[in-house]
Amino acid sequence: MVPSRRRFLIGCGAAAASAGLCGQLGRGASAPFSNALPIPRLIDAAASGHTVHLKAISGRHAFIEGKPARTYGYSAPILGPVVRVRRGDEVQMVVDNHLDAATTGHWHGLLVPGHNDGGPQQLIQPRERWRPVLKVDQPAATLWFHPHPHGDTARQIYMGLAGMIIVDDGSDARLGLPRTFGVDDLPLILQDRQFDSDGSIEYDNKTLGALDIAYGARGDTVIVNGAIAPVARVPTGLVRLRLLNAANAQNFELRFSDRRVFHVIASDGGFLSAPAALNQLVIAPAERFEVLVDFADGKPVVLETGPDEQMGAFGRLAPDGSSDYVPVMRFEPTATSTAFKELPTRLTEPAPVNSASAVRRRQLILNSGLCATRTETGRHAELASLIGINGKPFDIGRIDIETKLGTTEVWQITSIGMAHPFHVHGALFRVLSIEGEPPPAHLAAWKDTLLVEDTAELLVAFDRPAMRTHPFMFHCHILEHEEAGLMGQYVCA
Ligand code: C2O
Ligand code: CU
Image (cartoon, rainbow, N blue to C red; front, side):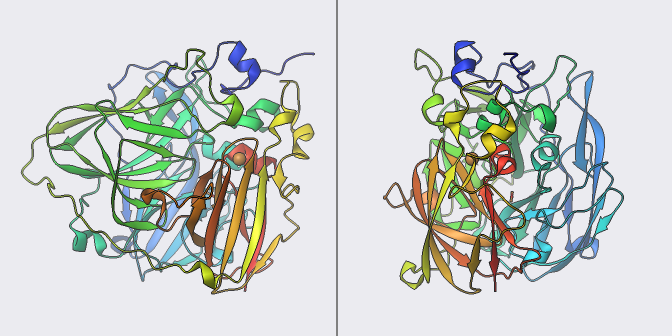
């Protein structure tokens, strides 16, 4: 048996644990807090004539000083712009593919019809262009965009293709929320990467081992907006952080070094009815949370992340059970006269849900086939038959579910193997229950992604059409699970 080369720090398989590799995050080379937090370019769609160009390109980015790595980005060496759109706008998107691989432009969380959703059917070949017109009609929220070409999604996102979308419906001003982009309203795109000694990041679809697939690609170094352990200067008041987990597989368990509070004001699909105060905030791949953090005391503080506790039986590593928090980034408050001081008590009541109106109930069992991954010599194919939803791996030629436009359904999601971040395209949902209990306040508003540890019930609202040619996807957002078959398709008419 020749062990396959372990490309990622696959956290927590028995083999990795006994090799002492676990504890993962924070072992990477970095001089903490020497980089200023990069702020992506803001494209305001209205100010740019309602046309937004995104060019998928390959570039070079030095995560580690003096060691540039080959990366991808949207009109940037890595990641992409933050695109701000207004409710009611029609935005002409122009996506150019300058990569040497087919890609797609998927608008994660944006409610658009299937043919504009940028799923795996909507391939943009190298040197080609895709021009969808996106009609924005949903409440204010933080969304994102990324590629979705089946078989290459995980690699393309890992290489850097991801950007943020901000939907504005006027409520920021009405609620008196911090909203000066890059000053008191900060996009924070959280990812983890594994660096080679020359500073490069590599992702080879052909050499992924069974454990890479089972646990997803995980690295030992956290990056924020593409920078390792950056530092942000913030006003001495309330600052809004738009947190996006754009990692392939890692859950971030966030806390502040001094345990100050996250006032969660919004989740994936928009505002909560009132701020929810948490000392610790878990954010799974593809989830977003908007939080207000109070820096009025002027004291610098470090945002940290803990060991990923959501990985099932193999997730706990530290033999002594010690918690192993590592720095994500640092905040340094500097006095300004314009800081927001007052935390709103009420936000926006999410549209009411009535589970009695659901027209049907479905059960989806997400299986990552973890039990088959004891050896590192396993191959993709051996796992594929075990990875799937309701026993079936993804088939782009099969429609799994037919829904009716304008109806709601209860979907009961059950995770096997480990906690899976379940995501639905083209729809938002409300969490009815998690392990039979009502959801905590910060998970009680509209969402499109939920980390399901065991079982959760969702009330899914189908408000956008999708035909058989361009169905909507539902899948686990651990990208290696999605690629290996933890994905299905639905139509809506
Ligand atoms: Cu973030 Cu199928 O998407
Ligand atoms: Cu999964």
